[in-house]
Image 1 (cartoon, helix red, strand yellow):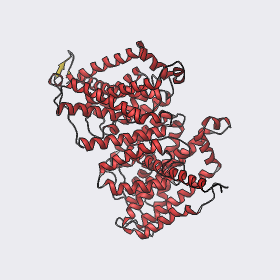
Image 2: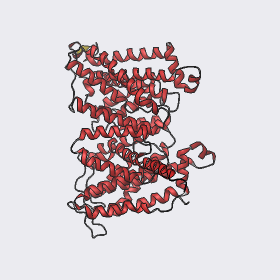
Image 3: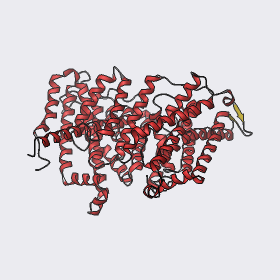
Image 4: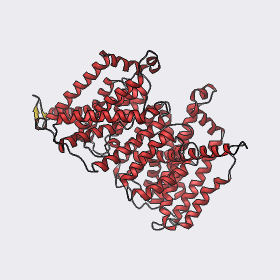
Length: 321
Length: 291
């Protein structure tokens, strides 16, 4: 069986995305946040789930993309949305490439620390240049040019933003899906599973990791740029440890190394956060903590992993097919 | 104030902050060196200890010293319970699981503290004997800072002697160097780890209590200082007491100078320096093995 064959249920997220547009016109702002989070988690899935690069600093690239779009728009240098996202990908990818060259020689705790430090470094740089980046107050009311010169990014009604974000996510997802089922993607999985064997069969491990990290960073940059465009706002929070931890939690909750984990995780996390965090912020944090502990101890592959286990058990009971 | 006393003041203030950082981080360094366990929740024990100290002093009217002792025992006991109940199944799993688990633990501690004590900032009232100024001959400086520096030297010396001169210290060093070999020589690594984990958490509690006066104490503590604990440990080198001591002192002084002269984003130099050091020596300044 060809593993990359499209299955019927793979259309479901996109149908749900379009249904959401018609069913909840008042929640499109929330929908945008959801789509951005999915894209961000998807970018992390490529680095963490497929290549096994454990990073605590992925928000560095998200923030780089957000500030690229934000600062270009804020000073009226470049406000076109599609090319804006490409620029965000370029800047974040460049940072990912440069940091990847030096970081990916290390492993384990050193790598974890270095990713954390790169992110903290960018955050402090943005803080230092508060005259340009707006510091903690951020850059509000970014002017974003209409999409194709026609569709306005209205601050009141997020319909253009939502459809635009959905389209961007779709394109990026297709790209990632093709990538992970390509020989390149297979070699990443090999590196995750056993580095020494990949070295032994002559795979250029470090080069593969750097390429993967760069692509992952560029996608995170697109997610960040998309956030800046859909909310017309950027501040230092895009670069914080909080955001890096959140995206990690989203991905783990859904299940990493599975493409669709990012979707499931983002939907469940944001829905819970949306309804619980406003009413019981402390209980939400407590629940989040307990959930993480339970996942780490008992359900390492997240919700999708649990679902797969249950499905396999069900098929076994039905007898071999 | 002239320039020389300025410098002396900065160095003393930085050393005091660095001492607290050392007392909190030393346990993390040793436990990470022993088990390779990425324990991001170490700061939560420091916070827990800090809260025990403050509450014992403000509500039960204990003395500072007694409160610190109570805090050490309470935190060490709590850490043993957590270690035996939750930590041990994860020793042999990957870093990712450990990172997730300990981040979850941080959230539980933050939420638990907010629920039990409240989200507000806690203040610690130093005893009168420590709150004045002390004449050191060349400069007058806060008694408490000088007290902290002296305590730090004594603790570093004590732990170093334990490591170099006692049986358990030798066992710890052997296990950090080569765990499998140590195990096959009959060293009970699990028990050794529980003991050092309890001791390290207790030290973190003392650090949390000693630093509460100027680092502040609120439920966000474990996240706020997480990066600093990790920098001290990784730059110093895993399992190296002297390494953590030097790294923490340097970090303390640097942070003090930078926040004084470059309040906006000055700490960027700390991160640059950390990255450079870790790239040049991935095992840290005094570490003997890869992280």
